[in-house]
Image 1 (cartoon, rainbow, N blue to C red):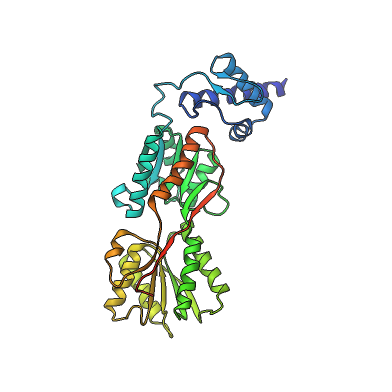
Image 2 (cartoon, rainbow, N blue to C red):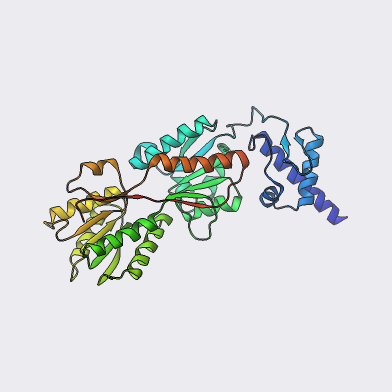
Length: 356
């Protein structure tokens, strides 16, 4: 008798989960497959099928063996924010984002709107805190969404969304052991190419310059940097990774330290376009000639680098292409509640410059 009671409770809980999801318009037209639903609800197929049968008797679903389960009842109008909404999390407002990000967010908004999935940007410092669980719980209750896009997400944020099984993709790279769909620039490939470029230019002491923070994309860039050094046929005599606090003063201090070694660093790969500009102007202030004494490559690109002299060697990506890939996954999540945890990496294009 006890086992039967437990099973009945599981069926009732699964049925209520499905009712809530339907009320919020989480799915459109038909339900995801049984395997997907079983994984999300943590129940067996017999339990799921019993719950589906309850909703069929209520007139909410059309269940046909061997075919997708069709939704018969439209989503409730009073369920709060429409579940067709795609919500994007950011620690900064749109106006404070780098130009590349502003462009792909605007493009993403247009593409989602055309598909009937409006984009909402939620700017919050608290969900980016070291312990964001309470703030995230409050946000997802207050602003339900069909899918979530995480920008500049921390490891703890990614793990929180994964553990709760919410439809989510990372605009960036996932940390190790987190299995969420993600879209990012291939920083590993960019850094590998940059090392080869500097080695071919005769640089013997190369540094990769990164801000503190440990974003997964920066970690992938580090891996590419080390891989290229290990495989290079003309191995530089020394290499190092310079980490700074993100401020102009902190970055300049790290550059001064690298130039003060004996022998000094003669090739810099700098992450973030603004930091690359700081590196170039600081070297000029110190009287260091670029590229005669030191070569500089920017791992990233932004429109303002077109106006820099000497012309910055850098890697560029198409924001419209980035937005298309994010939109494709976001719409799949919004419509089906699931997307394979695939890591999409977009190959950047090298723009030759006068700094190498």
